[in-house]
Length: 231
Image (cartoon, rainbow, N blue to C red; front, side, top):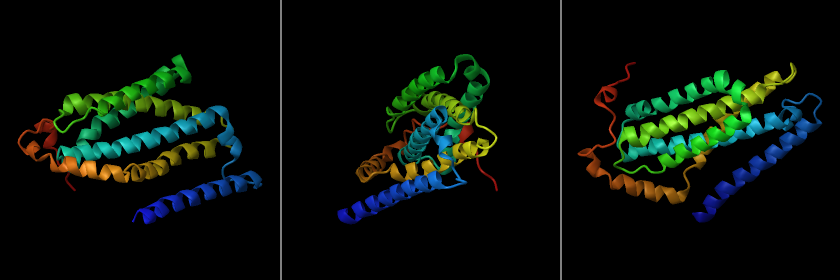
């Protein structure tokens, strides 16, 4: 079973690497490349693409485990888990808009990236303190706000810098590269964020949480919990 697992992991990675190399070679030699390499090799634009890549991997991987925590550990339904994510989504939007309209013109991208990255680390470290009895407001809502604002700021700067300065012949591909990257990377990150050594600990935590039925310290307020989806 271990050998089959190794093959199932190594072969797709090797095939993906080979296809990526072939794509670069074809794009470099083609007269009309789909993705001109000068778009990616631009210093600011390339750094922005790398930032978006790292943000997508961290964001989707973090989202996956937070969903596991809410639905497996605290026994939230899918609807309640979705409601619990609303503050994070709102803060991402607010952080992105505020960065592009207010902060970026005043402080520039370098300072914003440095500060927002540190704030994002603080939010992730806050999430790392979660326990089966953690309260929603102090243990989930607060880090969602911190992490969401930082994430929105980083996305705002990265998206802006990835398209600024692009000429008429590359503006479309520069923008497309930004918008198509996170969903693809996010899917891979979500699937690859569950190594075998985490399956047993998660299952063990699920078994040990029966007492939460009586002491639901991480429950959302009744007003939010009563929200239902009507089709």
